[in-house]
Length: 331
Image 1 (tube, one colour):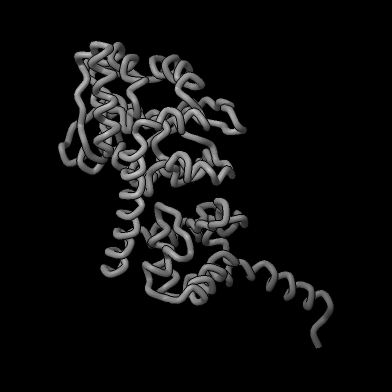
Image 2 (spheres, helix red, strand yellow; image 1 turned 120 degrees about the vertical axis):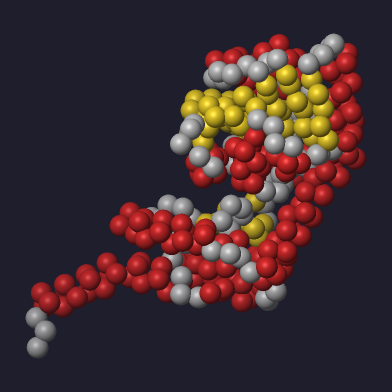
């Protein structure tokens, strides 16, 4: 007959093994592994994941529930929408090594080609909607942006921050320069400035401002970061100023930025901290309601960037922004 001590030990053993069992069970399904692969660098809603995998919402919700119960995915609510992403930190520290090993192995796996095409289609739709918004609202961009954080609210902080935290001064790339408020400071600090924007209307307005200010060392490039990487330039500094929350795949943008940097080059990111003000999507063309600082840290670390200095600023209407520095060091 089992003693009370043995019974308690067995119960404790079962309790200790339960989280590991849940993780292994969740990882034991091929479709769930493909879902985790899709969530490698981005967050998606249930309906988007249904479109990628071609299954009903009820089935997808079941798989996501299993993954969530095993702490393999985390959720974030944005208004009425819930987005899923991989959970990089397991609440049970004893299982962190197992989780890391699983994700590292999964990152090397190849996603089914059909899923890859559908995922690319979703990301393209997100990008097209963002570009269309800025082309249609170029004349009202500054007015819309003032609802959240105008350049006058944070521009001085960036202009003071940048010279202190960049070393090379030969070249800089600003992605999504808006109306070109930052170009004058960049033009004075760097020998050559490149302004990259995927919206032709916004880029034309940026050019006009640069001409008015007689900025003769600025060139303008229409396109996205993939086009920029295809040209194979290398910059001492890349600036992402209030850009990521307008982009459908922020982790991929950061990956492109890492490719665009010289060794010891610096990536400067200014963006909103996570918030819950859903109206920003309609009024300002935002795709994401800001980002947790940990998300930027995770994405940059994955691309070999080392975190440096940070500055957090309070904006109007309850918004906060984060000004972050990351450096690409030699291996």
